[in-house]
Length: 151
Image (tube, rainbow, N blue to C red):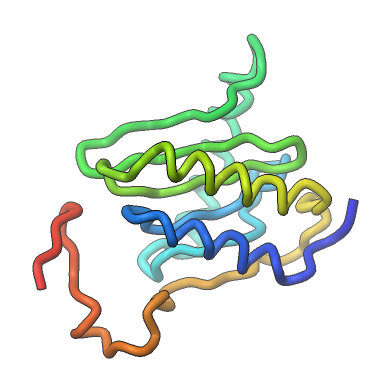
């Protein structure tokens, strides 16, 4: 197993190419967030609380066999957990995300993480709050409320 090289963050950012993805993060086997691509409103403190809970969910569902994917549905969002041998990818998406596209994207990202040892990562690598469309000013990118474009 190898440590992180920096290309892992680029792979994680690639999940946003699927329409409806708000962001994602990676958990180590210990439940620590080791990589993130989320809006700024999700602080490291919030993720420090969420990480162990998501990890416990993975452990609970894996007792009777490995779960390929877990989807927790909320009114406007979905939380998708993809367990990997050495880590877990967690995706926050709008309720109308194309799950087939997301599954394919998660397969590709999961393969790119197959030789990475996230359990030796000492710090969170972050891509928080940056837009994927850097050419347009924030007002031109539009705003969303409950999954619907409002500007």
